[in-house]
Length: 70
Image 1: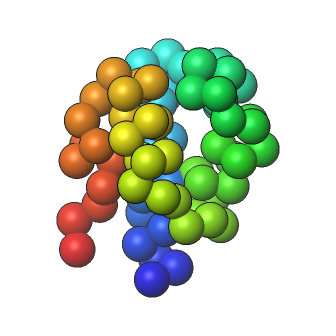
Image 2: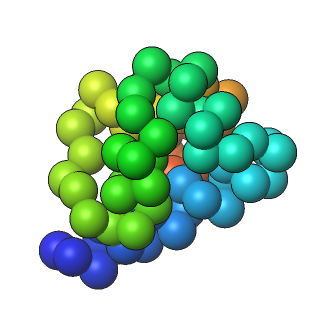
């Protein structure tokens, strides 16, 4: 399970950077704390479905672009 969280975080980081967004900008635009974005990207937190959709919408991608294949 921990590996899945880390892979999700890596996907989030890749897509975020491909859009030219910093963690701070993403966090501000999504209305969440920057340190929380960092924890997500490091695979330290379990993300809710609501946060998944919020991050995807904020980044401008589909939620499936962030979810790793199992």
